[in-house]
Length: 138
Length: 433
Image 1: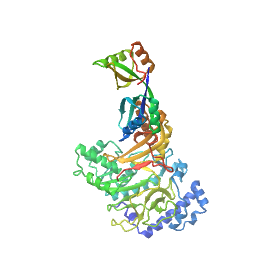
Image 2: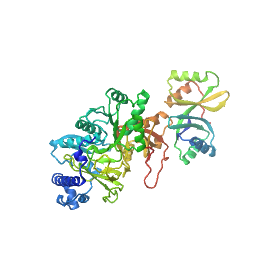
Image 3: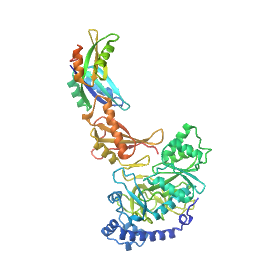
Image 4: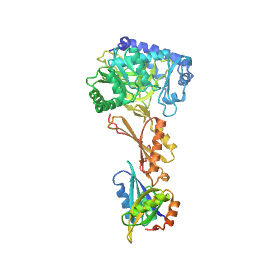
């Protein structure tokens, strides 16, 4: 039910993000979701791509520090309150979120949101019980 | 002000006779009492009776910091332990500190040396000396304290830190002379400005600043901001603490108390003694010390000596303000740090590579700020910032507890720091001093 997210360690220095995205573009990798978690002197770029292995290989070749994390890509109703309902569900069922961000996907009027939860197994169980659609591949 | 005119204005010929007499007594005493020195003399094939002139000192082997560490704690003691009345050590951040053990007479010598130092800055009875050097094993605090007591001045043992209280005490007790590190004096000035305190109407007239490198530019800034005359002072635990050398009112080089501490300048490569005016490594012999005397100690400080008559009237030899080091030691807020110590801490932390770079700068506060750039070990890289932040604070805590300094830790990408075939560039010192 999970998909592979790639996290890239980035120092806060100019041009670094341009290098990552160019590396991915040159490798023919298409990004479907991206976010940056930043602190004062470093950032972590988190991306979901169409071909994770290809992306990892390309990043590795260029010397980037990258890591794969299992995350959920859940389809939500693309309307006011869509996310709130899911959040309420997570809250009542004890699914703790480490972080979330949205993707570019939008099929059948559904938004796709990427979730990293602290307990993947528990999250998986809750998603299945409540018949949430988790995307398996972008 | 001169504390001891008979010593400080001494005729050079008489001075040299005194130095030789003291040196001969010293080597004889050490040969008899300290196996460490006797072995060194024997290995060099010399006897105390071979020292017949001051020039003969060049036949005596040097003593290094490493040897001082190896003989910790009392391997160099030249008196019975019961004669020791006080012990100080260097910060000892590398593990084994360097010991200075003082007899009652050593404390008196130190008091006189520091009384001379404070008097050179214009202090005497009636003066209020605010001593913002740290009290404790560090020699700065008690060294100034003893000198002030000898001088008959009023000493306020406020020690380091607590800047607002420093300013309150300074104003309420009418401090006339301030002793602290030069960078702390500027920090004090800045805090005073924020608090709306003007130094001009205060009785503060002079300061003795040392324990870290500074420059003429910094002196001008200190003098303007604190409205006082700033004097450079020099000393080290191995020799006595502060009181080895100090600037008089002329502020042109530091008069060495050479009747107590015999200076030489050597070529750090060959060990050859260099003539006055030539730059090299400063070496000291403690002519009168009883507890832990030291022969030809290599300070690793670079400077030169000059003996031109000083308009203050003192005849003692002068040394130029320190010009550098022969090793990679850094002085951060008065604490001596070697890059190798930082490396030792990093090796203990599995989340990092021992690849690092140290950047030192003086920020808006004028205090030394140290940033350590560390490569994250790839297998510990995380998609969560809190994990990396935890690694960062772990490193900062380890550095603080091992080295006693606060450092900014900056995580950098693996393999991003320069690797060179030979020695990596570890230190970037950007301090404009």
